[in-house]
Length: 411
Ligand SMILES: Cc1ncc(COP(=O)(O)O)c(C=O)c1O
Image (tube, rainbow, N blue to C red):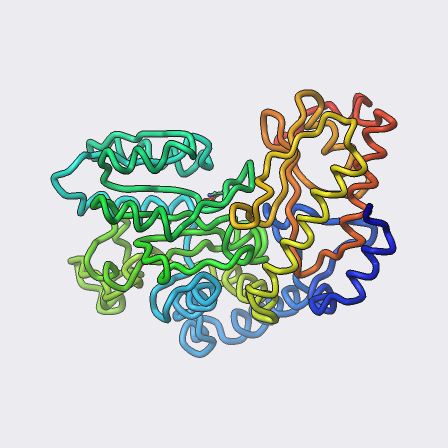
């Protein structure tokens, strides 16, 4: 049996403990939702204010050159790339994950050979990925085939054009074997697009090691870039100048300030930019990345697994009689940095009751209680406290109170 004292001892021995001072977290809050919106880094407000007051206010339009605004997509993209096994010059920070997925999937479809015109994905992939794929497939004459995770390999072997998967599933926290699935898809002549929304900054990723083709991901989750932060996009160097993405805006032009009427794509991943970048969002994302670059992904993964292991075992020890089922795989190699539980009745209300107590996780329809564990600012005692609140909410049936059963627009 694990005790509170054990958790305190783990915190005392934790080399990442000082990193929580990089964030401003409200008192009394245990934040288990950094997988949805990362918390505010302490440095962000002043840095954004400086950009507004000095770079915008004083520098005005000169700041595109003098403050490095123009190069931000590539510079910040490379900082993200270092977290996901990209080489310099392969990643840009830009636009949203949905828009970036449209660009890379479209590029992948544009070179599909004479083989089966099929895009393969997982039925429980994040909806925006499926919606984007659905409309692109309709437009380009492809079929979108959705299967359960355990049927992916067999379906690849039947022949596909593109495999499009999210590396860590948003609802279950289950993680695919990127290297294995990429190799299998390549062996059958297909290209692979990975969505790293729940992987970048959460688990070690090696895009080049896996020889992947394309990847996209979010800036506002584990990268702590703030609400609506720019997303990112990665293309393997062997493809970067081969394909033209369809959103051919002037930021992806070889010489945008020549203002020529015809489109000529820039070399490399720069051609995946479209229009003017959101400078304030980029600056905040840069501050979020500072928090990750204060350590390394191996250290974060070690602690993330220790935190999620502890949560799983404490829920087993202390909430056993409450009908909560573990949805996330126990096996380390198959788990991201979140733990999901399911309950037939009351999952939404239980999450609401926890939020009212300051333990912030979230609910995913129809029956998932989702808890994200970010080792940068969470400690082992936080995990203990979260499970104690969960136990108490269940023991006292607090979740049955009417105020916890009224649905908000964002869950
Ligand atoms: C796997 C995945 N892809 C994409 C998105 C969101 O994309 P966007 O930033 O375009 O809203 C999410 C959001 O939670 C996600 O979980």
